[in-house]
Length: 257
Image 1 (tube, helix red, strand yellow):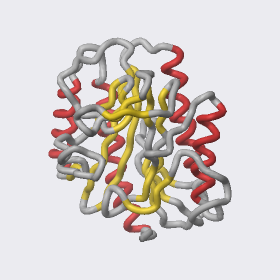
Image 2 (tube, rainbow, N blue to C red):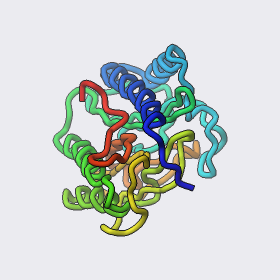
Image 3 (cartoon, one colour):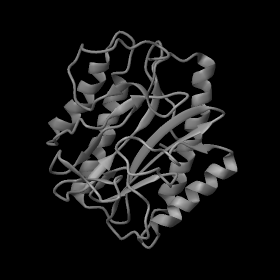
Image 4 (cartoon, one colour):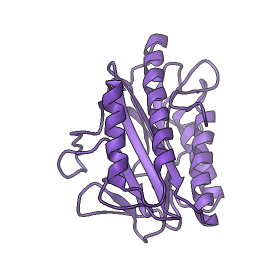
């Protein structure tokens, strides 16, 4: 069931989204060579505690995971792209780190992901991260009343494929509001003019993700961490948005980006 949100409900999600944006800004500034992934997890926990927010990840137990998730943030390093478990690992110069987090404040959820390059960047890694960011921007631009869900998916996919990447459709965007995952599912590849008609009040998390040279994925033995099947590096970009009467509003945009 798809529930359209009122202006007051979107305002509440905007508050949550602003907190998430600030948190990701904070962690992005900390992600430097020598910093341990567990330190980033603990910093995220502290910021969530201070704000009185509730992690949507802690104790999350979907059908594809192995047991409940026991962290507040997904930290996916290099060839890991989704659902990466924070572990005892010091970041190295040139690492590619995706950070994905969702929290609830006063019962309203926002979800966002950002990929950063630690220290010196390789050209191919910058191109990869830029592609998921451009694809996300294209998807957001297509999220207008009068368009359909397929227009968002097509816009995301067009950016990715036009820049030489292959798109995996097993995981994509989703609705959200009172809970982290609501209808509809938003694939990162699709056909224009197809699917659900977009209406003001629809809130979505759009999240293109890519690997440099494959669309195939594999799972770690932990049952959570998803990697590129060929070990190539990955990127993941995500915003929570609201469809309005005109251009979509980004609810997780930080003041500095």
